[in-house]
Amino acid sequence: MNQLHTQLVDEDHEMQTQKVRELPREKLESMGRYVAIDCEMVGAGFKGSRSLLARVAVVNYHGHVLLDAYVKPSEPVTDYRTWVSGIRKSDLDGGRDFESVQREVAELLEGRVLVGHALKNDLSALMLTHPPLDVRDTLKYPGFRTKGSKTAPALRKLAANILQLRIQDGEHSPIVDAKTAMLLYRQVKPEWEAMVAPRKYKARVVKAKTKERFAKLRQEISDQQQQQNANIS
Image 1 (cartoon, helix red, strand yellow):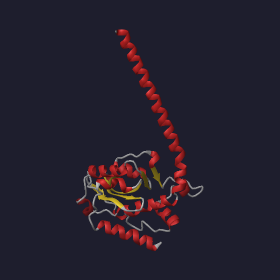
Image 2: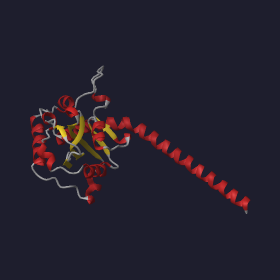
Image 3: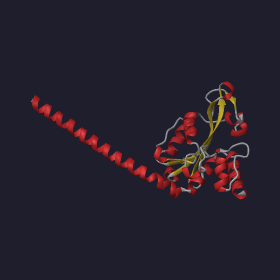
């Protein structure tokens, strides 16, 4: 437990004390099919009630960091939420523009299975969407919920109960949280994918039938046009 916790924290510290190089475009193909993401927010507006993206981390299936970026706020920050976000003003002074980070994240996510915890919040902060069949949200996985409980499990609790890993003792790290979500997914990957498989099959069938209907409709329209042209001539 302590060894894994120390490893994750040390790796996060290393990423924060050196510039993270962007993944070369030619290596995107070798990233693998699975990525995990986590975002940290700061507050804007009255009493910091409105969330703004401040930092985003993306890791691959093996926990290798693909992206760790601070994001320059688009409006004044009224609450850095440092006690939980770990974000300070100095972090954002040299942050990247939102649009450039958004584009890079979208490129990393395209065509891949997205893993994370409470992904709705992360995608909303990034103003992105992802195909539902390619989303693996540890907040929603039935096997992670306590029987009879109506409360969604916190990532910290899942890490402790399933991975025997202590995280989020104070300020959060998106690298640690993304890696933790991926570790949780890997614990139950066969069972989770077995649950998703029937939905994927149904989606393929619906897509094929829709394609067939559109092809038939296009042919009918083409036949009608040919008939009209023949009548005119």
